[in-house]
Image (cartoon, rainbow, N blue to C red):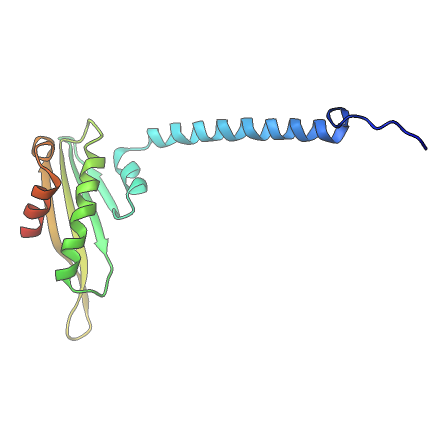
Length: 150
């Protein structure tokens, strides 16, 4: 009964554990590289909709006008929605202008209006349009002042 114990590194289960761990790590690295490559192949519109949680729809035309629509479903009044949208609108434009194909960005904010009789309709709350040059020459303070006046 006096068996000599094998060192930990020579036990079969330990070697299998190392092999499985290395294999899993390799697959994880390859999968993340493939995922990043496939996201880069998506059209600009789909990349932005995935990247920015506030954007519900996005389209770009041949001249580089990117129109992004944000549909706000909230029970608050329009007066409180507009100022809170300015911060994410600025960040959204920054993200959109990272793509060289985008020459202009139009952010359209839509809300559901409920009438006195209970009928609801989708209305445009705000539309913010900037060219690349205008946006690059605009600070956040200037942007928020102009956007809140629209």
